[in-house]
Image (cartoon, rainbow, N blue to C red):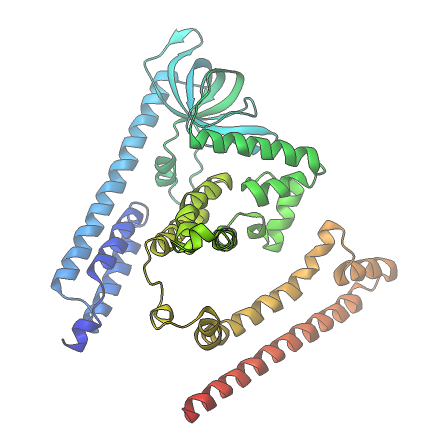
Length: 432
């Protein structure tokens, strides 16, 4: 087998990337075509792809482009049909089926629903479709059927050069009407896993509101339920400081929770003699962890990063549940301690020491925003001193020097640790 064939890029991977890139071509056709051409030419020059792979990429990109264009076209037709049927904002009534998990936004629930049997201002309409509604009882859940009275209008479309074409995002949500509800009466309560999760979310939301102070409860809901419901001032403060991501349930949260849960369950199962003597307790724990991962992802709001992490966790847990060897160290029979000592930690430290140093430097610098939540730190003391002495330049200059010394010390320690580790690794390789 030739080396060029061994180094060839996986055609299936290229086709998948081209299929996704074709969807982007709806809003940025020339940019996507130019980037794809540049990548293909570079790969061709390096001998990494052949004519078949090039044809597969072109076909996949064309299919992705056509599919995205068709979705946008159908959504625009549905939007035009809704505008023609309803006209300007009107008070309407109808039967709604809840299709998204309700979230709290500014003290009211926001939820997507499929509307049917709609009549506006006493005039029955043949239109039916999806709408985003605001309001309703706290215990709404996916699958519930309700009779609603709401003021419906076409969703506002913000289209400018900075934000780009909004039509693909609108077509992805498939919402053609929005408005506030005046009355919501439950006709049928749904049963099932998703509805149960939504009712658990409602219970957690009520418990958070009853436990925390009014100004702290939105942060707790963001960390637990993935709801973005901060007060305007707090939201601006977090955005200005670049720390908004701290209030989002990310994939890392799911991975950490699942790793701890699976390990704890495996430890409990190994203590049951009847189970530990017959089967691998780790495989049972991994199998149980798959549905738990998706339940937690839904409970945390099912954000994009959370769903991606759930898929990755599913793949890893299924491999473990099926008894597949997950890495080469396990295949060589190394113990867990030997894996961490000889393989995992040396590699992880080598690649993570400098990024971790950057994280520590960032932590030192971001302590300056603690004053926004009334914590008495260096910056808040400097602000008080500057207001008392009317000498802000000298005060903040001293603060600048102190922050520089702190970050310089952290960087020096990180660089020294990295150099010593690399020298130690080189000496060990030379001895061997």
